[in-house]
Image 1 (cartoon, rainbow, N blue to C red):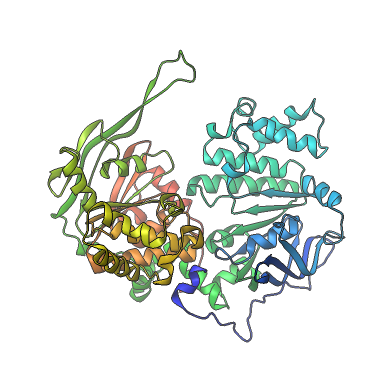
Image 2: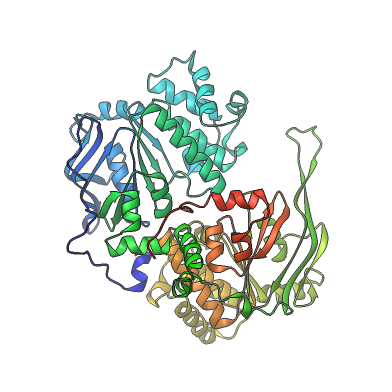
Length: 588
């Protein structure tokens, strides 16, 4: 089930859209790299053929970036994989044509398709850890692509690999080529995949959510690098993304997909400023980057009704500054890192360095920063999963971690986490009911009847149906799994919920639903949130106060309005500048 169905609202199609669902046909065709004509994709299932893409039409020209946007399950990746001939074994192009230059890809041999994928068609996939061999050096993986596709001989492949890694911005490329994926950061791994995708100097590059799991500053750097490289090469780009703000900023043309249909397409700024389809409008309303820009414009124009719709935080006046629930004082965390060899000495690494913060009861405090800034380590210390090396953390006046096992159990009832990946944090062998019931069992909550009543109450609070309680995590969408994780976190009626990147793995429509859910639960139950994220656009919607962390230290702190309107550090300004669509003019 798609999460968009949670609201049970139909999405109508306007009778006379100004922005067509078909590509323009009055432009010259000699520069056309890709033309998809009335293409449909079916998947064989036990219940018969399931149509994933229906009658798709789009055109991509040399040097042009065309973005396909939509939520998970909209068909955007399926369309791209059909173009590359990489559909799953039970999938096939049922109707229509895919023209690459002057070749009908539906009629070429498997050998010709493989040849095109190695040279003329490039791919940058979404998850670098899944798409890189963990036991093979990065350089060897690039080498193999060059050799297998006949682009270089084995003798001179490494020299070309180093050139490619240098082109995508990897420092000391020759040394990096000898390292393994686990020795690279997320951004470095993505750059390696870009090097592979561009190694054949393709005419068309498919970039499938190439930066969705990365920090905004890393995302901007990689997209800038990709744009520069493809511009130099004249490469056309088919960009797959769920973020309309990112698409509008980076693409020439935007194609909007909804449940397998292309419902709208046109020039990026036109689609953004005058969307015609209700689903496009909904995507725009859901994208945190655009919501952040909408809030900024509304403040400039004094449009209070727009602000009320865009802001999810209850407002700082609702949180009494004197009623502090959590107080962190001069906390540091030092880890001992082992050396690279048996005889190497270990070294100390300071992940959190002298951090202080207060979390007023009933408020939302956000901690933001790039990967490695120390924000998740800080959250783990507040959760009493990690112990501070120095400093103190108090909760409701009591010292965290000072008591024995009984005190720790009592603390667990009052403080609960919601983590980034709900699939990893849910036992795949437990039903939804059992997953939500588990903390009630662990803390001896009532008898089976009382636990069932509590589970059903929690499911209702997070908009899960009774039928979904009997399902397993693998049978749920990402947004539904995160609702289960939230219900489980609320089972023991905690006072503080620590949300560690709780929406960063979700597409924008589902993300908006979860943020609205969290805001509603806060108002209903009086919850206090510590919100850990790398996305300042999300912070502007939901938080009262924000702390910015860099390399283990707090470099800026204040109300959300103060930090966004008058950032005092270059680092905060860089984070704000990296929000996609920050300079776009939006229709309010």
